[in-house]
Length: 217
Image 1 (cartoon, rainbow, N blue to C red):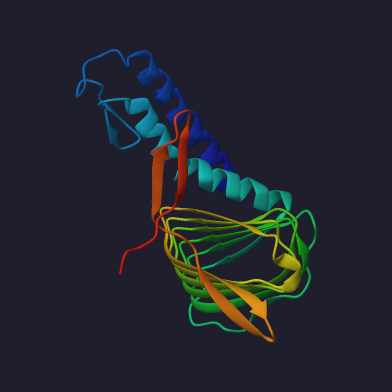
Image 2 (image 1 turned 180 degrees about the vertical axis):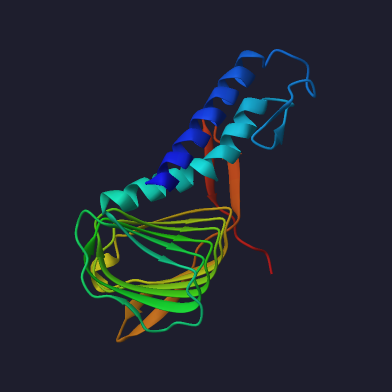
């Protein structure tokens, strides 16, 4: 609880500084001082808030949810291929952080799964009712045994998704990522389909239309 109180106090101080900076945002670039380690400039409050969301607020939310008992965490695992969560609950969220060269199997039905800052990590899960998110990771493999409505891939290099027959309607949402492949079950095996990384946008007379761009050989 002392750690949570410390996070609350830090958060309150930074929010106060953000409010002050926002009130002074009319000042010339370079004359806005510093907040949370970010120098003032063009839209400094936006830059500072973005950095805050990637650090202290994320830490606070994760810890508060852990205290509430609805987050299953696996952190800093290295060279582990025997990680298993034998039973999950619908209200739970799994947060997997900085796990490398490891594999995790999750059984049952869970609300959502977050994979953050992992490398060479494998995940096998049964059912997710919300979303599976992969963030800031590299060389991720996941296998869906049951159903999942959405898989989100963000700032990730290398992600291979094995879908089950029941998960073929899953939506894949990606941004700032590369080397993504979806593997579809066909005739007792899997057929690999690359997720587009390049897009072409054109004006059709009334709106912008974006579609995958074919790579010229």
